[in-house]
Image (cartoon, rainbow, N blue to C red; front, side):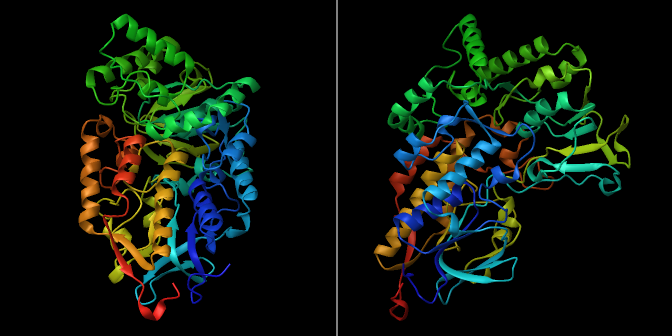
Amino acid sequence: MSRLNEKLDFDAIVIGGGFSGIYAVHRLKNELNLEVCAFEKGGHVGGTWYWNRYPGALSDTESFVYRFSFDKELLQDYSWTHNYLKQEEVLEYLTHVTERFNIKDQFRLNTKVIKVRFNEEEYCWEVTTNKMETFTARFLITGLGLLASVHLPDIPGLDNFKGQYYHTARWPQDAEYKGKRVGVIGTGSTGIQLITKIAPEVDHLTVFQRTAQYTVPLGYRKQTKEEIAEIKENYDEIWETVRNSVTAFGYPDTETSALDVSEEERERMFEEAWSKGNGFRFLSHVFNDLSINPESNEAAANFIKKKIHEIVKDPETAQKLTPTEPFARRPCADKGYYATFNRENVTLVDIKENPIVEVTEKGIRTAEGEHELDVIIFATGFDAMDGNYKKFDMIGRNGINLKDKWKDGSRSYLGIMESDFPNMFMSRAPLSSFTNNPPAIESELGWAIDLIKHLKDNNLKTAEPTKETVDDWYNLCLETSKGTLFHKAQSWIYGANIPGKPFSLRFYMGGMGNYNKELEKRGFKELVFDKVPEKITSL
């Protein structure tokens, strides 16, 4: 295999070893025949599924669509046992993909990228690692992770704590919590999984809740061989549904409003969805307007609130667990979260009512007093979407640093490119689609890799969007978000979980189907191209 430009170390450099990095390396190496190197800071491929090893970790996207669709034989050969994949099962799957497609050796593990810079004279990217080595490539693909930049809140006194503390996204294999007094800070999707799992295993569990969550049953169960065989037989139709639906979770879109049916029928349909499980199914596939119509949203919210008070025996605890915001966050699903608070060894602390003051030697002090603990677990999530893009210098044309460019809010074109950063292609970055990750990755990076092929085949050195094109995409994203209720919830979707972070739009909310139509409609015609100069025609 010969490089496009022998002066460079590689044709393409990929940052990240999760779904995005694996997909990019496979297509660049095996389809475009490019010389590729990928840097992964972890000790194994897997991305977020390598780091998030906390008890109870699993995907809340159903198994049959939480995987790649690019290879029909892979879809048929590789199977699963339950309708949701546990963390270790996702990791096993991704490992299998790297081995099956002979790309494992392209990944340099335990290697963290600390700086990237576009060299305007040589038309290449320079990538520097924590080993103080710098490598060059014509193309840069960043799979830094949508939910990967760990957020550890700045709580006074943490270093004084005499016990152990962990973050769920950096869970050590030797973590000790069983039989101990444990405090968990955070009740998002991760916190819900963790709390439900460890409550029976600890001496006492104190849950520090900032925001009460809407969560529905997961419906976790073993699937029969016959059921899985039927899914595999119908995969062509399933993936067609995925790519053309709103959420890309494998459920067909519905045309029914919650207001189209009687109150009795609406309750029956909510009850049926509650019994089947899955938060995304409940929010987006029972009725088509729960996230856009306040009256429909209130009906769903009231149904879940009623369930909380039916499940939780103590009225005061039930009230603390009852959300006050609209049902308009990333939907959560659980294996018995609300019922966990009926356990005698579980205490709920509302930290909006009684804020955390400090961490002491013995535990956590809130406004109401001290809670003695042996272990503190932070399930406090991530600086989502753009957090990892601001952790190191990313220098584009004219010395422009991406973190400075995004200081008042992050932008992109299609969630894939940014002006002043030629030949840099992002995956699951700001203003990408708010959908199931694997098919979204295949759409975004599929477009990007097709563009790389276009550059290669047409002797073009660079491609990038203009600032005006980026702004136009932002305005479209803004327009699609106006009809939703998500902006009313103070969540990570708008950056509200990070103190001081600008509250701004971070997703295209038009759905997977419409996003794919945008990619097809726009093609590459809105980009600016530079031809390869005579002096480097070897490109």
